Image (cartoon, rainbow, N blue to C red):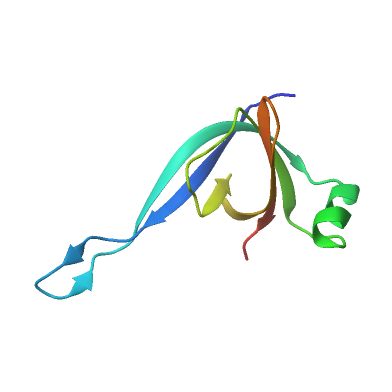
Amino acid sequence: MRYDTPIYFQKVSEGEYDPKTGNYGPEQLSETEVFASVMDTGTETMTLVYGGLRQGSVTAHIQNAYTDAFSSVRIEGRIYRVDYTRRLRSKQVFVLSEVQ
């Protein structure tokens, strides 16, 4: 298994509070790069996770575990949300679906 595809865990943080106006500043997006093995999700896994087939679903394996909070994952310019995750002894598996 080759961990050669960069994936980016995205975290959206709220802007700072401005006491003069009473508003919050613009949201800030931060990304953390991790290399992963990315492949299409198999038919059997899609049936287990979604109850049927779904287009735009990928499976990503990363070495070790990612413990920081995140809201979405970006792979090659496309945004994905996590539908299922499983932490194993030496890696973590994510089943992702594309956000339209």
